[in-house]
Image (cartoon, rainbow, N blue to C red; front, side, top):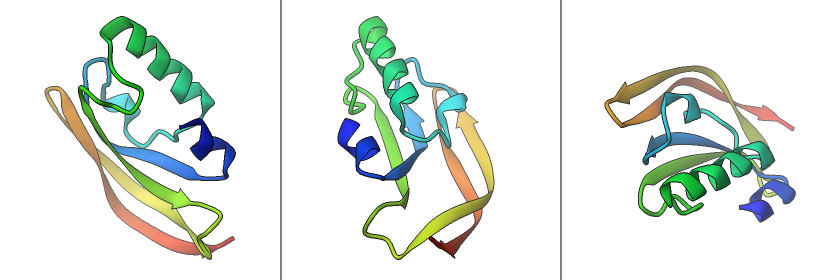
Length: 96
């Protein structure tokens, strides 16, 4: 995941289902701070940093290969018991 951060990718979490992850993780960008928090969860719950033993889905908003980036304008967090997803209601493509 370090390579994702250092290579200019902008990636967010759009779905999570793993012990230690709650609604606040939905929509978060994968960055150094998030990785540090995942390391703490790994130590506490044994969760793999690639979400093995749980589940997470991501969305790439921008990367060096894209001609345009995705800009999210409106979302809704859907959470049920121990899992949830980010419902993207409106998004546009914008020039870089």
